Length: 329
Image (cartoon, rainbow, N blue to C red; front, side, top):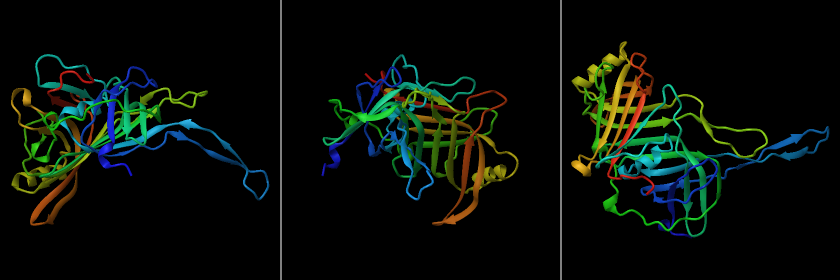
C-alpha cells in the first residue's frame, strides 16, 4: 500500500478548452481527493417481445464532474481555486497582492481553465480544463478553516506529475476561525458597519451554476457555460447577547435584506498581510431563534445572495490577498 505522504495535487494554467497544460503549482493543505471516471456509458434495453433482456446499446460520452478536493484554506493559494470561478487579472504594484473576483450581474464571467493533476507513484490522473462547480468553507472557533472544492472539466485522463517541490511552512498560512471578523450591516452604507463579535461558527457555499456545452457529433463537451447567476448561501451561529437579540428581532420582522462581510485576516502588517474577504448582499433567514446548548444561548441564521436592485452592485465579491505577485510562475 502506498503511503499517505506519497501523493500530490498539482495545478497549471491552461490556455484553451480541452488542451492540457503541465502543472506548475503544488497545492498544499489538501487532505483528501476524490476523482471519479469521466467516461459515462448508458445501457438502453431494446425490448423484443422475449423474456430475455434486449440488445444493449452503449453510448459513451465524457462528463468530468464531481472531482473533489478537501483540506484547509491557505491564503497564498486561494486564488488558484478562485480562478476556477472567474479569471482574474494579475495584480500590480508592491505586495501584498489582491486578487479580486466579482460574481457576474450583467455579463458572464469566464473562468480560467486549469489542469488539475492528482496521484502518487502507482497512478496519476489529470482533469483537463478544470473549472469550479462549487466552493465551500466551514469554520468553528479555535479551528482551521476547512475548504472543499468541487471541479468539472473536459475529461479525466492518465497523466503525470511534474517535478514540483511542496511549499514550506514559511510559504503557507492557514486561515483559522480566530482570523475571522463577521459583519452584518444595513443595506445603506458600507459592509463593515456592524461587527458580530459573538459569531461561533458558520459555513459558506459558492455555486456558479455551471453546465457543459455540448454539440451532437462529439462525445466530449466543448466548454462550459453559466446556466444562471452565481449563488452564495451559508449559515451563521451567533451567541445571543443584547445586541444580537436585536438583530434577530429585526430579521424576524420585515428587515431581512442585509450586507454580510466575512473577513478572514491574519493581522499581518505591510507585505505580511494575508486575507480572504467575502462580501455578500443577502437575504437572511432565522432557522433557530433560540437554542440553549452548552450553557450558551444561540441563534442560527442562514443567508442567500441576492442582487442589490437599488445600486446594481454585484451580489458576491471575493478578494484573496497574499504575497504572491504572479500566479502560475
